[in-house]
Length: 168
Image (cartoon, rainbow, N blue to C red; front, side):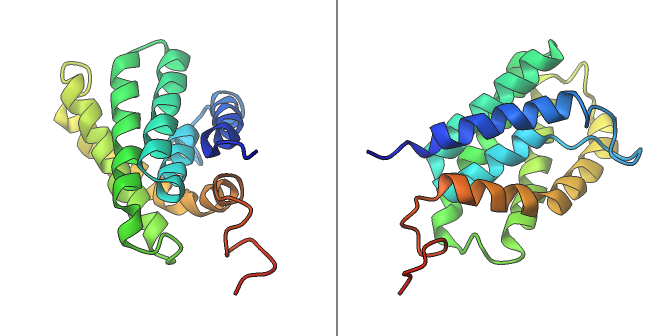
């Protein structure tokens, strides 16, 4: 019996949320605070497909929204849609290409912040988006590889050619 990829990913979502709300609660180097559960969900979507991306995105959105106790619905939608979309298109390209995860993280973060701005325009105007989105997207593009490789060890099945010793 094999454990579902999401159940292998769920503890990592919880650990990422715990890290984000404790040790990494402030801006990284005074620049921007990375959204670790969102990065885990993005990596899960890239590696596990649409369903894993959607479920992990909902998990990341719930954790972030409930942890912030503010705009929980906006967090849920803006964190669920980009990983699901990445999961839907990930089969069309090599997710292990050196530029694929950073490019996907950059684009998904811009889209996520745009969704957040559309859902809550009174609290997050366009000026917020322009000042926040590019810095956040750049930080996520730089930080995606360690998270991606960790998720690859958990989401991919043990029979995957990348991680098996008897690959042909």
